[in-house]
Length: 355
Image (cartoon, rainbow, N blue to C red; front, top):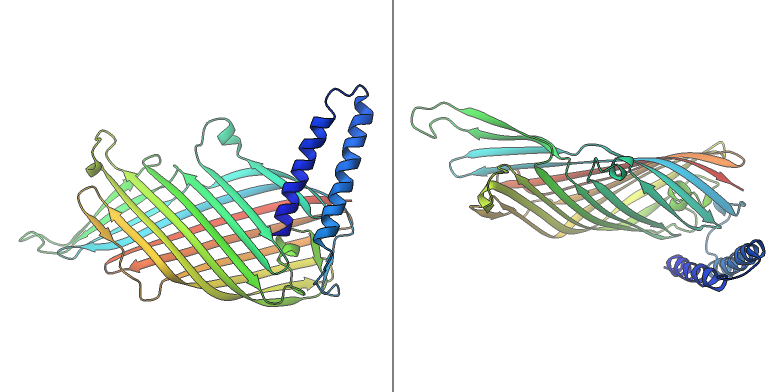
């Protein structure tokens, strides 16, 4: 976590310098002194961070450029699927999809230290209440993603299968109800972490953080863990205030597993990363509440979480372009009793300049 501490120290220095410059008559000289002092302190922090290098520079090299500025176009989508049965073999199936969300991002880095921010124009205009918060860290061997999503654009359908003779003399039938946008809300919180055994030769940062270069193709076995909490609430009768007018289902779980990642270097300029982690759910909790009854999700025979990543990066002399994709799929419960599957997808198209 050295880099996180470094960022906090750097922010403190910036604020202190701004305060110290208040009231200075010569503003031009003050700005020059401010940036010079901040850069010197940043250099010292980075030298402290990199004082014991462990990477094999024949495979992974830091960028020769000190500064990097990026702009990005980002997208996100999610879906929820639920299956179950009630007494008398009455089955139900729910499918929900979120409206795709798009945002624009800007970022700046100095020798690997920096930050980026993204904004959704529809949020700014007040036309969309959905939002995503994401924090990523890609170190030499350890990395993680933190994600929080709140969505009110889920829509889909709810189906109920009624077998024959449920009521004497009736035939089997399937009843379908459309779920309009605005009646369903979702909250999604997730943390994914990994450990790369071959981190001194394989670099996730080269593919996703773009703060270094992968010079030779290389891969690594991964250990991974995920912690997720998903809550979905469907209010199907807006005129009613009691709990019987809504359906709520929640899924929380923790999983551990292993996987593999590989960086393919093509003609020294192209980098393609493909990785996957399959994790077994160790602890899980799921519940469905329709206002009248409450049911727990049964323990799955093989509850799994899949975390996948892919990246395509093309470097030029003073710039680069990249496409990154991140997805998670998780499922708990049993199809013939009660099951819930959640899928999340994020992607970014990035252009950066370096000098």
